[in-house]
Amino acid sequence: MSDIVPGKPPVDPAPKPARGVTLDDIGAFAALLAPISRLIGIDAGTKTLGLALSDVTRTIASPLLTIARTKFTKDVEQLLALTGEHKVTGLVLGLPANLDGTEGPRAQSTRAFARNLNALTPLPILLWDERLSTAAAERTLLEADQSRRRRAEVIDKMAASIILQGALDRMKYDAR
Image (tube, rainbow, N blue to C red; front, side):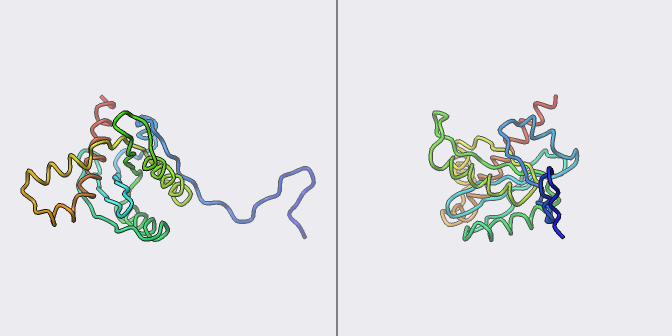
């Protein structure tokens, strides 16, 4: 027997997983978060995903790790495992806008990454302007007298930490 009833839309027997949402508005993003919860910051490059993690009070961002990119599905599998492990309730994804504020191919690629990620997780994603975050991370590592090899190992997760810290600081400022 069919589940089709004349005059009513067909019922899909397999419920669709909850989809996340991508936001540019930090206030709307903050409103979706649990009060005491962690966020993951992401610096999405072509070769790596640099990740940073906030504390539960969303005050301090710390570098977490770098995922060497292979295939989207495998990369996101690792990312989502970390979100579960650390009880993350939102993601802050660095949006690489040009210095004049326009968006080029890298920004479009980042938006596509967010759209694809939304299909796999209900976690909200905040797109955060990451202009000069990698340069700031490089400057910090140079000031710490890190070797070129060491800088290459940690630059992406440091950039993710700078992206996430910027968003955390703005959320604290807006909450006042």
